[in-house]
Length: 181
Image (cartoon, rainbow, N blue to C red; front, side, top):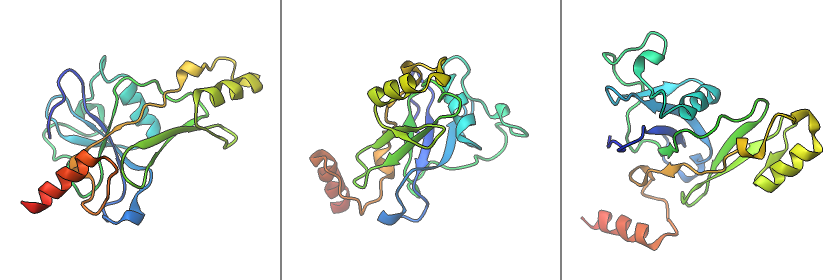
């Protein structure tokens, strides 16, 4: 696994290990890389993952942060192409209480679309929609539009299934060149 200089890699892995186009979708496993041993550790819940991600710079993840875990133990999950990996930006704010951040992978694997689900189940796709929702729902008085971040995690190109046709012509050339070798 390559190291990112100056920041910790935090990953979400969408797709199942079955590498078919129908298996794509949203995130199914959350993981963080230990800053000491560089092993990947599965994070049990989205809320726990968001806590780790929101403090990635000030409190980098280490194996001992997970119960009954140390750097001496094998990795929980290996970085490989059995699933599509994405790396979330460090220090994104935690999703406000009652809301849920959802990421959905596009069919061509070009990016993940972020949206938020309100406590009542309504999907909000833009800051304007969030602003209107907060204005119409004064019970969320302490919540601000700035508490929501629509940044898309970076899709790790070396983990995209071979059978996916991507829109980006540079990626297609890379896939063709890789297949010709």
